[in-house]
Length: 369
Image 1: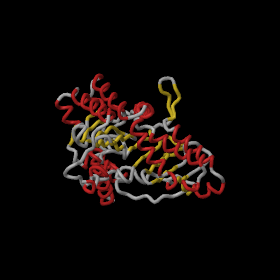
Image 2: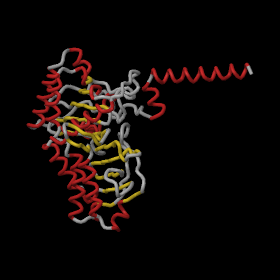
Image 3: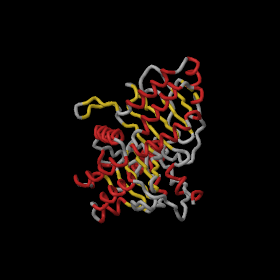
Image 4: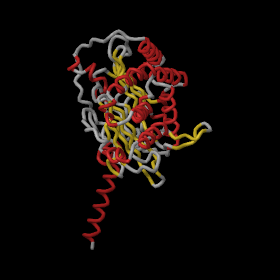
């Protein structure tokens, strides 16, 4: 009996020690149970760049970025800036909260009101009104999740969202801007007049909330557009578009750099003009977060490849926002992945990647040099 008791107490001690280690090392727990350690982006940068002359939009973005950085003190600026070739920070984003996945960069809670206003000005230059509104809604949603966690395992709240720069904002050299946190990652690579927003993580939790007197559904525009596209298909076309009756998770989320996703679903060349327009509407709902200037350039490329663009659907058809869908084209992959609970999709993960120019690789990678 005594041996059994000693053995039992030993097991309890080992379990308690293991739990303590995981509690004190939330990043280790996140890696073990959720596979959050994706490692640095495997992107070999060129040694020199032929950067085209900047256009007015880039000049305005650089001016706003420079003004924001100039408003920081030395310690803040050091926290916010990284070398342009820092591939660890380049890939340092996730759908998980701070604590489980430390972002690096300068947290919002370290900014004064005037500094936050300067950051808002920069975001307004980079993004459209819809893009800024999406961030506003995501931060408001995040603040509903504050749980009082004092152990650092789950750091919910907009105060933990981070801003970072790789390189120095410039019209003649490449640089990168990052902003994000739980369920949000804005990764912008600037190369003269050219700007890449890939990869971009949106989504949110909770999707439904009351904000400033309005009932908000964060992902409404994109799920309504996807449903409208599905509704435009014939029964035979739906048989091609619908891949399964259950949802799936993101394929190109954090750590997805360089991963190839084969197109599935119905092909653009098999759609009518009206259906193609609705498919472009699905794409616009997401890429419409980008400022008007860069959005117009991107959509011109997307429209030119619409015949080689596929749309696939995984999940139910009778519940708005409850199905996973994917758009796969020559210059983009969009995924929308709802996380369905007992009361429906409580939150969602949405990703945009440009397989030809993720992180601006077409401009800054060794092949581009």
